[in-house]
Length: 137
Image (cartoon, rainbow, N blue to C red; front, side, top):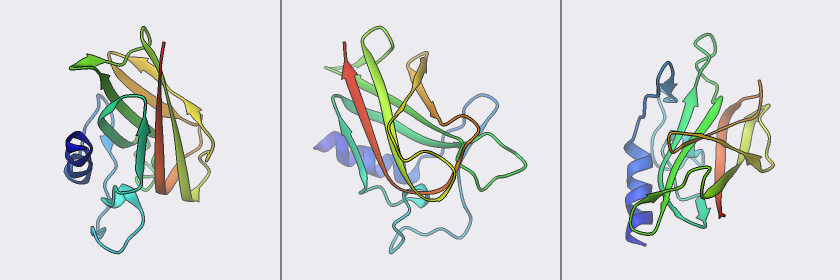
């Protein structure tokens, strides 16, 4: 439970920058009555199978800065074993208010311990809940 609380606080304040991309941020978004977690409300995040380290909403399209194109995840099992393609599979399901991104489970691809979850050329403008599943192999 302590790690989940750390995650909830960390996701609310974290702004991660991946190589060549920028983390999704939006001006005028407050943490409060909004049910959109991409603005900071994270009580709607669920994970099963491991402990979630990071959950980043990424915009890779400079011409459309209001779009979330990728969801990036890092997770671990045990004391500190990173979940990689050698020991697990990560899937996400983002439920969207607006946009063309899927609201079904997406299988993510892993590189260097970071899982990238995208729905082709589709995108999300806002996300109400995110489910993260880690299936260990």
